[in-house]
Length: 452
Length: 32
Image 1 (tube, rainbow over the protein chains, first blue to last red):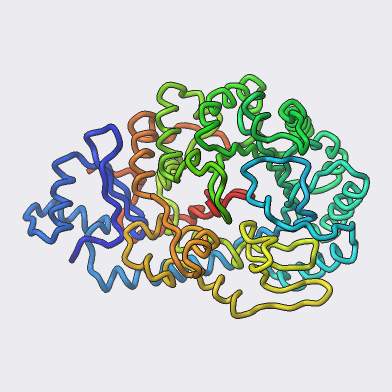
Image 2: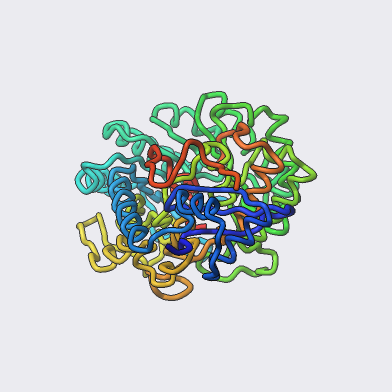
């Protein structure tokens, strides 16, 4: 019997206690200092003669037989692959890369925007490809840009056509939009089966307007707020995203209060997410204003001490801890956190196929075409499909692998040049914050809104 | 040790919980 390689053991932030999590056995415990010291001794291979303690560790899979653990890993891996093959696919369609905003941090700012006609042939070819290639899969479509909801008659005609085609195929739709013309699009959206609209606000008025302004200048906050109000009034689900860096993090508290005062957080049609501003494809002009993954959540953790109302607006996942507190069980082991070419594909109006939203539109990332003819780069597709913690060499001995899942394939490829390389998530550090937040500061099982 | 999972001993299959990918999967943010 030996200390399981899947144990994640650490000290809870601002606490005397420790935690241990094992996603393969599905157990999680809080330990006092003395038990943590005993576990640490076992990890180092020292003998321990506390039979009762050892029995409990064995029962919970924190110490285990190596070959038995390998069998369990394999079984759970096969279950994971099985489930993923039955999972719903998110299919992105980019109608254009042009945008009416000039956000300084946009990762698409260096994309080319080749001719953009409302070509019904391309839209027909897209729906025909989806029908044929994903015939047996549950699926939905997300319309993405650039900005898809632009206020021209040509664009409205294109969106109306896409909604008609989706209805014909009995597919639901999401839209990722800056929200500026949302109100104008409500009559169109009401004709479709709309699953969710993702809109971004980066703070309250002045902060948002300084970051997300119109090309040529012009405020956008008030108009987006009206669009969100209109969606919620029409029972259309809104997923509000706030993109955060060091310049606007202090506005999180104000935006949370704004959303609470506006009645949004009480709506069943409202949820939120935080997006970290980061360098996806190229360097930003002020990299020192960016958070890394853990420092963003450390800042939010500190802010919620003084501004607990933030948690009514947004509850951080802190890796698996929010899930654990709300469900009293761990999620299934995460053998792969990158959906590209498995449960996510992306297509654009030029007829190209890509792996996901991170790669869509990048000329060197195309995986084939669906228009004017169907082509596929099968070798590259297979490499994307194969990416998980079993094919990324660095993941194999990592204790956090089943909480991290290997991270984002596109970020990893940008960094190393290889798809099957890791993009490590700071899962242990996030759990240190989460165990404090959800098990010591806030009682476990406390209610949450629908945020991610 | 204080267990945080309900009615659980090792090797008991839990109901199919949403995996982390599902939890963290947002429309346009899964690459972070």
